[in-house]
Image (cartoon, rainbow, N blue to C red):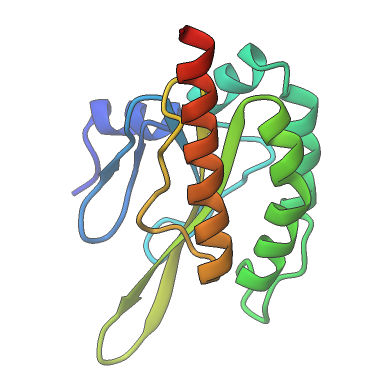
Length: 168
């Protein structure tokens, strides 16, 4: 049984990510782009940009930056099955995080392991956060080193403090 029309629309907008154990609904100011999954397969990230991600990039003047990022990601080295390699995604994320942050966007590579007695696979997606809407958000599925997670939390807290100061 497939997803309902409203869920398919939510996936296309980037406000939900389809996962085998149930969907993840994005918080306000957060949009997701699925990279690959056990049942959904590899996504055509260059040509199927979620509408919410596209709108965020347009609002923030980051469309060209996003295209550069997603092309780099799509063309990155894959493993023998054609799957994205986490090490490659981390390198790309690190290369672009500062540039996205300058535009008011945090970028998080998320990964969740799916295992059964026969097979282990990973659901992989990117979450894009509008810092002006949700400055302290760090996804629980953020796949990074402890140091990178601590830095993301520090950046989120600094963005929230700057937002409070600007409003005062």
